[in-house]
Image (cartoon, rainbow, N blue to C red; front, top):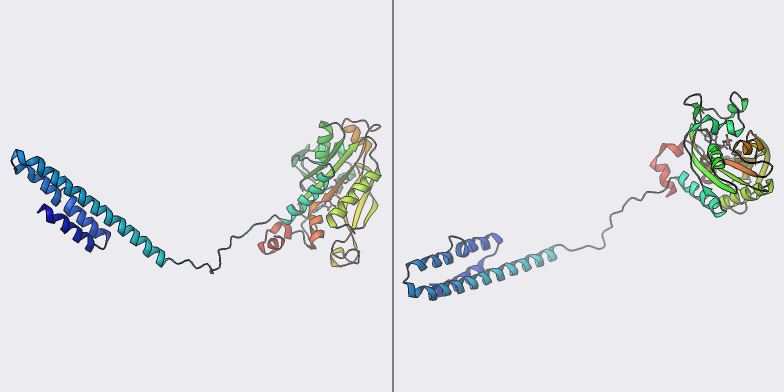
Length: 337
Ligand code: FA5
């Protein structure tokens, strides 16, 4: 019986086609109540002297059977893999899955350009709080309380002494109070004014202001650096025009126009036919501001400037409505990828 059983097992394994069939056979022969286990139990009925020979025969049968089961399982696994490989053909000509790519907002793109131009000329980036002391936003910038110059910037007041900053000039005050010249900084950030929303105004917008204080800084430095900045931003052929202007914290002050980046001075709808567009305000820092910040205006001089990043971005890309920058309409933003 023992001799024929291994033949019987091999034949049964040969015929088994599924995992379930294999499992059934395993239970039938090798399980706790299986036939081979049963043979071992029969040993009890044999005379003592026959038991060792019988036992080793059953053990040999069990090992042979286990090997046969393992070989069959291996064979079935290989066959299943082969079948899967044959069935799952890879079509490399199918179009791939596109991952939508995000991009920097146009305001951030232009900010990075502005930042890189100024840091390339030795300026550092300094940031400051958006909720600011009236003292830093106005008073130390030569704009006393109740002075008519305050009307130039319609202000959100938090309390009598605290405002939401109307420009990033207070960051320049903070820098002068903290650091000895030479000071060369740009101050980017969000600013707030109680302006009504229209195509060119937003109550929240972005500025980049700058400050250069050292011994012997003149208006020629201001013209040279700001002219170079605008040529780097809008192209080497950009023409600049410095017109007299007024800011309480600079004297003399100037408004700077640049030739329109879209029509190069010929006149187009973006520049309303003028060929030139006002891009920034600037001037030599008022001696009173230098003094208020603890420096001697007889020793130190410098210039400051401020630009609206939103306007700069709109000019660069020919965007005619500032609201587009804040609506986050993907149809608009995806044009800047
Ligand atoms: C100032 O804020 C000065 N602090 C700039 C300055 C600094 C001058 C240092 C001289 C020396 P002004 O109020 O003009 O200046 O604002 C600067 C720019 O912000 C403007 O040219 C304009 O481009 C932009 N701007 C002003 N109001 C708004 C608004 N409501 N929405 C969008 N941009 C605005």
